[in-house]
Image (cartoon, rainbow, N blue to C red; front, side, top):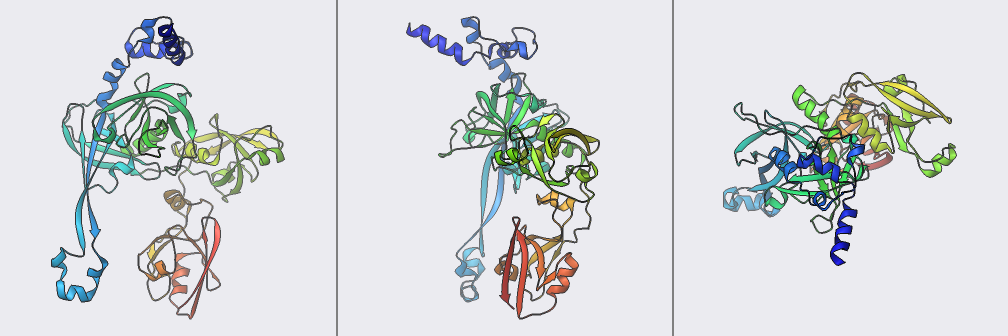
Length: 479
């Protein structure tokens, strides 16, 4: 009885996997997707193995090792001229001590010519990148494309004309919650490891890993070192790049997240064809809460509410209006503002997107042109000098192109702070990257040129008005 109960529990857990495993084990031709999910009919089907599928896909997953030279400051006392006079930099090897930092991760070959996808954070700032294939051959890799906003990077290895195993990308929108997946990577540096699980959730947008958030969630074990590895569906195709885990201990607790293959495809296309350019929407949207849905007469919260539209931008020219609800893009339902941004980020420039709009209770369709954001006005990147409290700040004119590039609000205008030199007057003035300068000493700041003119004059008191994370912020300091 106990053995039978154990068997019954096993059958219940694997009620939908038999058809998919038939593909992996090569026991039959692939039926239609809906027909391939069935309850196992025999003990033999329950005992089917992932081994044939692993043999097929694992060679395309690689180990990545990086070396980075970091400078570790010694005691700040030795930056003092008094100590330098008596001891000299040579006494302690200079003001900074050099150290080599090693890290590891995983990657996926997506082109037989040697193109590899991994996470941006795996190779960020690396001085040397070594890729080790399944056959233990090692190659030095170069970074072809990196995108911090999606946490993706594309590498290339020189194979000397030799074809290497590669995985084909599958449309992640075909996945359903409950589908079986494999995660393959190099956790903790122990070597290539395969774990199995299911798709736990789709379009997870509340995970603050990158700017474009719509992750695949899986309970397949993902651990440190798995970053950049493959999330593979049962047909042997790549559906995601394993990126992060939620953990209180550092180990897997069954909450892993992968960047969908849709986003991977856009970064790979840019690596093959040049600069990464995403289309812009030209409007600001907010989530539709239960209260907003009730006030608009909706049966349930759905879509996103347009709160601001950029004049003569794509949304404006498509006939969208403030108060419209964008319910779907290309027949894909939109649940929140993060998913809207993700959907647009996966679309290529050129052509158009089909939008489903709800306006005053009526549903209508709109066609929106997929255009590259314009750089108007030119950014005119400048580092402010002189004796003003803003000296040391690097600023630029905001444009849709620059806003898209740095992840700022596309509807903002004026002058934005791109960086602040540590220890500079601007740093002491508490300026931060992303601040938008609005006024200086009561005068409107609409361009870098005007800001330069205002900071070239001396004053006893400097009063700055800016916007920080959407809120007004004022600072006053004596000159």
